View 1 (cartoon, rainbow, N blue to C red):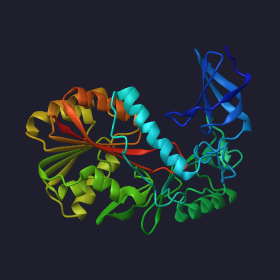
View 2: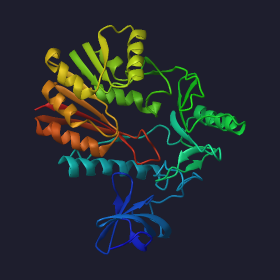
View 3: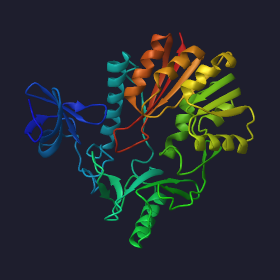
View 4: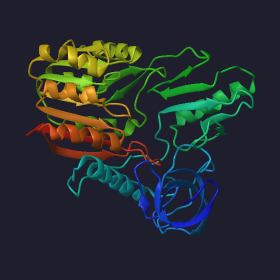
Length: 391
């Protein structure tokens, strides 16, 4: 059994969900951060749990043919972008393998072996939303280091869109002038401006807008909006497809990304969102689009389904886009009680997606289609859209 601080030599077999490399040594499973499949490395054990050790690379004895030199000078310290050691094609293949592994191992599903992942049009400079940390003692500004609350001081972030890189530089300038900005800063870029929000209240958080697939969405840094605008139109197309009908439900609807296009196709649409600010934006966006056949209720999804399922009648289409933790058990139970004809599940975590799909399929739904989208290049994260139909 290994203990913390031990140094061992291991060969990386493959990349697992969560982005860690898998290795085995002396009867133990070893998870290695920032590895490439095929690496022969010397690692230091950082923590253990039973027969599992978590380790970081101390020396690359023999690099994998798939390993490349990470272009970012902050790689290995900054807690983001944990796939920079892999070429982009390898990143895409690895994400497909991760999705397939989760669906098979956690969901008991074996999707079409040829299911696709759509690359991001931009491997770099794609991220239109960021969360920056401030060390108020040293005035360092950037992102947390991996596994810690220490701030990695970042002057240039290669995944930010140019507008946010300029904003990062402006925030750094304010800090150098002694302006108190708090510990946490949210930033999001719209079509014509950037919105900023701080836990210190240092900014008057402006409302910005973005046109996506012909719809105008208003939002701000005080709430959630997707990070990679380049892929939102194809995700909308995949998630909704050619669905039409009388009633559609949009769970975890946010500012209405899916609610608006659904309202163009269904006679009645109801969006459910638990965040007050996001729900307000969704209502405003529907009003701006002059879509009076859709409404947004502010509530927790499971509670809303329990109270409203009976009054909705037959639901033709249900879309859910939950947070990374997936749908709660009572949310899935509510969906099954509603019994929509079609379900579209938009997920940013393959493991929780597999867990939830297993429940839906066990209750009589059939996998109709699956497609992945590389919303987060240079990281292990991936977006997946799954369509289900009643058996």
